[in-house]
Length: 172
Image (cartoon, rainbow, N blue to C red; front, side, top):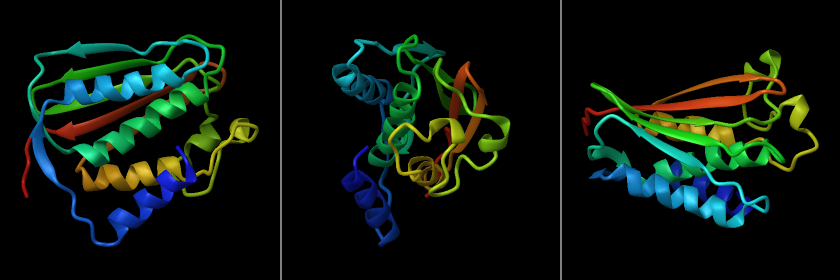
């Protein structure tokens, strides 16, 4: 994610841009994001996408969801160099749909995990890896706009699992 991307994301949605919720097929959107990263990953890693349950259209803002997913997939690649490929699971449940991104990277300590969504704060283990410390802070704001939740678990040296959960119900 470039500085321009970050600036655009902050400015456009904090300056009155209203999200545009539409009912969309989410699988092709996720496949497109995955493909973007596979074409730029120097190690030739491929994200494995698993779909659990019956794929149905979902209500979301495609642009915001795309930014959230790109940030989380970017982090999965960035913080797991020379490790197995990240995994992505899309789950269609009874009342919600979830996207789970699992990497096999450097992980985050329990102490740093507590502040991972705070702006400009970065995990100690990640200080030698480029980044602004804004990505996850923006993601949490976007998840609130999307009426979703985010859960993150991690273990240093073993990797991180991020679960994005969204309700099927849409109320304007």
